[in-house]
Image 1: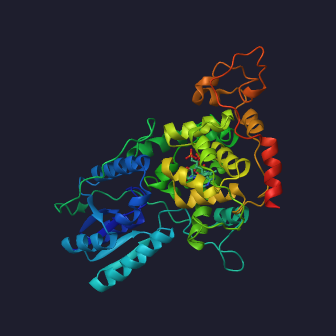
Image 2: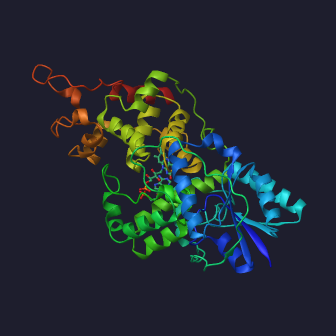
Image 3: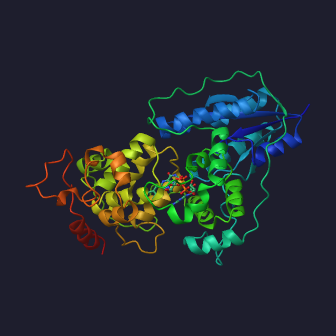
Length: 438
Ligand SMILES: Cc1cc2nc3c(=O)[nH]c(=O)nc-3n(C[C@H](O)[C@H](O)[C@H](O)COP(=O)(O)OP(=O)(O)OC[C@H]3O[C@@H](n4cnc5c(N)ncnc54)[C@H](O)[C@@H]3O)c2cc1C
């Protein structure tokens, strides 16, 4: 009887999983393995650990209880498990970060030395990083031309879930990770919940995405964490969105691929400025006011409190709080990105870093000097103050006119609010910012 091992990483699903499908086609029995990689332990956060745990539980039950969990050094543990099952191969989906690539290199060497075949498969992006290059043969650093090529590219076929198969079972599994307190309103993780979310999204709400997605309270797909953990195939989501004519939505999925191909090409993007620019401030008091949602700017505070409660924000809210931190407060984007990494349920080195750098003006934005005015943005994307009222209850009683500028109320007429004063004046901050970076 022939046995192959599939190592799951950022592809915790059965549908459209090329590595798993190939193994089920080629071997009588498949050993499905997940290793809690010691090297990644420092990036764990309560929100993501909770989703990971749920995703692994769901995958295990879809595989008939056969998912083998191990903990430790990913190379040692994979080799040990493959040997125990007498597996001839170790197959997995190719990662993009510098860390993922290093460990793939180490696994490839260890497998070769052990006489085990090692192979990488696509599945983490719609178009694999490196497949699309500019005329000069390099990675794309500007989004629009990348998007044009991405749309024109012939994509691989979406695969189905493999039919029930023989999975190796009976090897000693590690205990699932224990999780600390996560955000109270976290969504449920795992492929089953993700597929339900996808079906609900495709059944209707996706049709108004183009028109509404920038509104602060609008419903967006909320599939980012499912895509991060690979509970959904980005290719399947993109193909099905385009079948419904949702071009704007597919374009957002292309931003994800764009970030991944940039990360693959520039592995230090998570730490180093893409276009260097100094002059960052490190100020614990200002940083803490931003983190706690106590800046005195209602829309910024609403978003920072939503982040804490739900581990998630829509794209417009992320843009506003990131611009406020880096441009109004002048604080290093790395401090903001680290806070997002702590709390976001979809926190992802590639997407997070690319977007933070884009907003901070050190990345691929062609207008790095732009600075969002939080009050004008709030009036435009939360015109009735519904979003602010939901997350900043101390302002709930204000009328629509005052809600985004509570400091304009007349102190002789209005009672004081239990709400902090502004920690910075936007107009002055914008002048400072432009002065600082020229
Ligand atoms: C400062 C900042 C930090 C961010 N950090 C992350 C992160 O750590 N992880 C993450 O997945 N996204 C990140 N984003 C991108 C984006 O905000 C989220 O993907 C999106 O809000 C998630 O909600 P959704 O699934 O409802 O998205 P939708 O609006 O429904 O979009 C569908 C999918 O498209 C992709 N997408 C949408 N916008 C972007 C974008 N700007 N860049 C890359 N992919 C995009 C996501 O996979 C998303 O799930 C960040 C954006 C900013 C401005």
